[in-house]
Image (cartoon, rainbow, N blue to C red; front, side):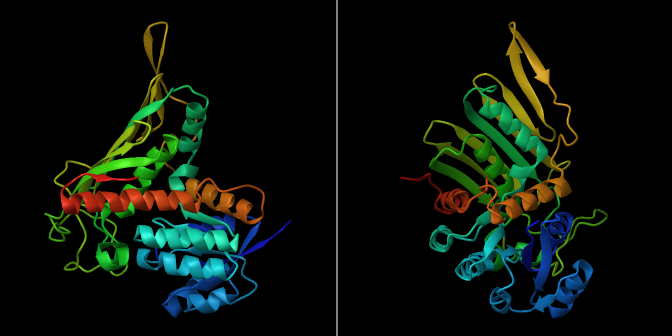
Length: 353
């Protein structure tokens, strides 16, 4: 069996599921770990049996034994590291979002073309069981033409702080952090139509609400109660060239009774809810039918989805298949995300040619 030697760049919280997923795949070995914090990198290397420890990603990329890398760093470093990795002849799995700007995304896309290497964008929800099954129904025509989708990812109290709340490093707040997931999965299931226009709103009215007591939430390792330069929430209407539309709203913090995650798609023959759990709506004999598939994971299963994503990446590195999450899709998502921010900032509809 072929064995791919992996380098993991960045040892923050999201890296843990990358490490665990690679460890679970017998075709991959975690060969090197890199982090600005040498102590943290060494701890991860010891935990997962990596031979090499680096504090410079450039030194890691110069290692000829490393064949592929996972990029789990701040958003503002994704493009720089991905381009360097591709030019060094490495395959790349880059956490979402691909980068911070459309210009950077296009530079990464060019690097993929000149290198001939695989770049897989970390749109992990594409690899979830409920998404995979729903796509089968859609591709088989059971829902007809998907012309409308609606998605919400709302946290009442959930600004992680740290680099997530630092616009310079993150590129934005809930829109670019969690909104990217639901926008992508809807767009993917809608058949990836070309974007035509966007209207959107971005709000920064509540701050990070660090004053709230008696309610816990995830905090980044570098969380600081008085640091926040990203939006509280955002909403948008995206219109596509085929006439379909997507309505989305997201938040880190909102005066909301409870957190909400909802993803719905509507077609000419039927509809579907992907989250909070998979169900289908159909019509037969002039009767509406609510259908719930019998599967292990009706909702997004974090560990299982990441294992599927990493397994697919390893298969792509071995030349066994092509990625379902290519760089071109990362470019299109950056157009949408940046388009929402631009529409909100300028107070007008943004159009695309």
